[in-house]
Image (cartoon, rainbow, N blue to C red; front, top):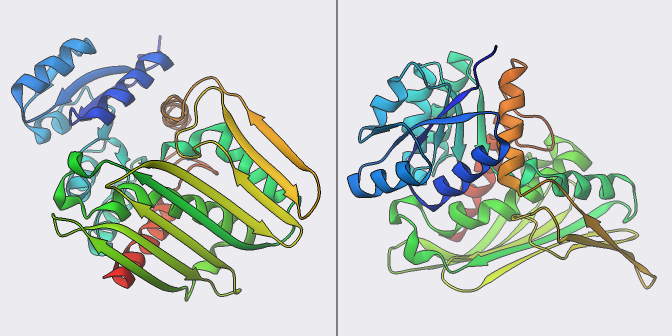
Length: 329
C-alpha cells in the first residue's frame, strides 16, 4: 500500500488554515507538521487541525525526512529564502503568491528549484479551478473575436493584516488581475507578447511606505492595451473584462475566489444578446490546488499544467509586477 504524501506547513496564518481545510477535504494526503514562531498560535493551530508534529524553527521542519511537500505560507519577502532551503532539501514546494518581491530574489529561487529538480508551484490557486479553464475556453471559441483590451481590478481592506516588508498591494492583490491578464494573453497570443511591454502607472503610498493603491496601463507589442487597478486599504471588489473585435467577456463573480457554485461570466456580442455561463465544481480553488499538486507528484511531474501556473509563468508574472511597481514609484 502506497503511503499518502505528507505536508509540512510553514506559518500559521489565515491562509494556512484555508489550505489545511483543503488538504483535509481532499482526504488523500495528510498534514504531518506545522512550524510557527509563536508558541501559543502554533499550539492552537496544531490542535485545531490535529497535526502531530510542531516546530518553532522553519529549518527544522524542512529537514524532517518524513515531510514530502513544503507549503510556504510566510510573508512575501521570506518566500525566496525558504524556496531555496526546501529545494536544497529535495522537497516538493507549494509557495504562496507572490513568488517574491523583486526579480533578483525571484531568479535566485527559481534557479534553486531548477538546479535541484524539485516540484514547484506558486499558490495562484484560482488557476487550478474549472472556472479559469472555462474563461480560457470561451475566449478560444472566438465568441468575442480577437482580443483588443483587458481591464482588471481587485481591492480589499487587508492593509492592517499584511506584513509591511511584503511590498504592498501589488504583490498582495495586484498579482491576481496581473496573472489572469497573463493567462489570457499568453494563451491567445503566445508568450512573446510580453516582450518589450510598455508600462505607465500611478501609485499612492500608505503609512508603511508601500504602494497601497495603484493603476497601471500596459501596452504590448501587438498594440493590445490593458488596464489594471488594485488597492489594499478599502473595499472588497473584483472586476475583470476582456474586449474583443466582436464582443466582450465580463466575469460576474470574483474570478480569484471561485467556489463550488456561483461562478458566473457573461459573454455578449456588441449591441446583441448576452449569454450567462455558470460553472459548477466540486469545491473551492484551494481544494483543486491540493488535488493538482497531489496528482502531479503522484505522476512524477515537477510543475502544474495549463491553465495552472508553471514556473516560467511565475517568472513572467513577477516581471509584470515589478515593472508595475517601478512605473508607479
